[in-house]
Image 1 (tube, one colour):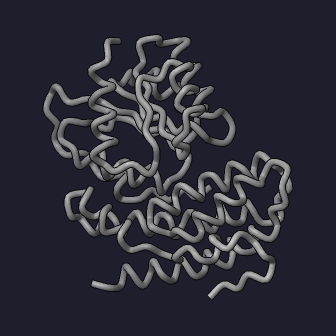
Image 2 (cartoon, chains in turn brown, blue):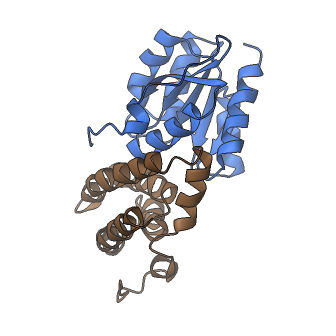
Length: 124
Length: 142
């Protein structure tokens, strides 16, 4: 469980790490092909660490904004709701706000989310 | 950025009828491209003919392929979707561009209209709404 000692907005840590209903809907949308959805999840698992790495230690506002925006959308598309909420917070703060605490939270959420998605892939 | 190419993005399309609607997809997120590719390829009326991962390359891809509809991510690093759409429309005014965005607000919708987009979809929309917007865009006079 992620702690919140930095007093960030509570929705960042109260959002579910992973909402399996999103992937259930996605399976329906692609004609019941779970393998395609597994493939999309694998893509997120491969793409997201590079996006989080772009956030870490980055002081360029535009780079922070773009990486967090992409991470927000891609995460929510696979049901990774908490990291989506954290990325939204970074996006909102990127131009002029303090983002370091949110970025640290984002890195922690990445590990938790990847495990949740891997568990989902293993469950049949 | 990752060079991985998911199966959903690389798999061959199903056979399409001759009157299918050709689509070019532009998005910087490989996860979003994989998801939209899967959704578009599941619909026999649509034929995904090209994919671009940034605004800069999208201009050349669209002008080369001249698809019936372009799905353009509004917010991308480098040349944004708004700028790319503007460049495409300046050189091909008949392009039918549907803007795809995470923002569902009047300001963004107005911006999409002002640049000449024929449609607007948000990333949280269900597949049926996305497909309908693309089909409706294809009916717009060019």
